[in-house]
Image (cartoon, rainbow, N blue to C red; front, side, top):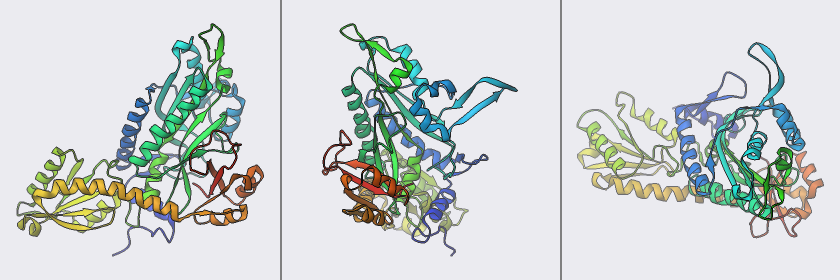
Length: 468
């Protein structure tokens, strides 16, 4: 039988494109750099949204919505911000058949428009902290698009907050990093992420500090999964976000912003996928167990439906594949491509013996299971394989992270994985030289792996890698 996917070891980028297409996750849109997210891909994004939204709200933020169009003048009020985004901006100059008096920008991010409204909504210290989040689309004109990873339009959440003190803003940026983002990525996506501080060169435009979560993909490259930024008082000064303090003085607020996007779907594919397609972690999977009727007759379809119902009643997200007119082998390959964590196959022979066959996507194992024990076996497999996927990803990262002592060694190690070396051995000059070799400093961490407060802390460790 012809192979379904290009092997990862042969051509990892082609394998990725094959999975996106053949698992029916997304397609390129009619405008270069845009994408159409198909139902299978959007179901995964909806699950990501739900899990993330719950964590964001638990951190105290409230959802709102702000306009797609931003006056160009708003962006120019924060010079560093607009300078950072200028190459990526989509600008509207005509509308309604006429040239606009003032061009408007399709939002690349919303610090400026939200800053304007924060200035209206904040009067005194009693109004702080103001904690906002929105789920929306943004547009950043992408020169080298790749579905989910880099597209001109993508979906995301962006949080924006205002605080009375720098310490409160810094604490909240870290709270989001760890309690919302890291918790979700580790415990739902089953992805070990390294939390660290971006260098000044890699910092978000207009920020005073950028915190990041980096994950290793199956080919050893890094993917930035999310960021949380301290904006200092830069935007507060530009947009007059001020408040009356307890002492009656007028003070500028301290602001943050933070975001994750549909890039996480690309990370899911490249972080967990294998040569058979997707492997979706059970806690994330829209369908955790697919019950498959092998063929028609002998009560097979009816028995499969009862198994599906029993799983559903036990709290498992289960679906029934009763398309018995389609060859079973073809359906099984399709199920592997789409990464359902568990398949429960119900066929005439197994049914006659009072069994079904439990197939686990993580390792491909097959186990005949008494019908009365299917629910317990599925729940056990889901929990075990959630942890198993995390451990596999962590083992990959550890095996392909190399401790080195010089920049040249780091650049060489970054050909196949991550390099770890003292930041003092790199510095801004070394960072620029690594960039010429398509190697970036992904983040800075303390020797114990924790996130530093300052870039100039002694003994910091730099993580270098090629990246998506």
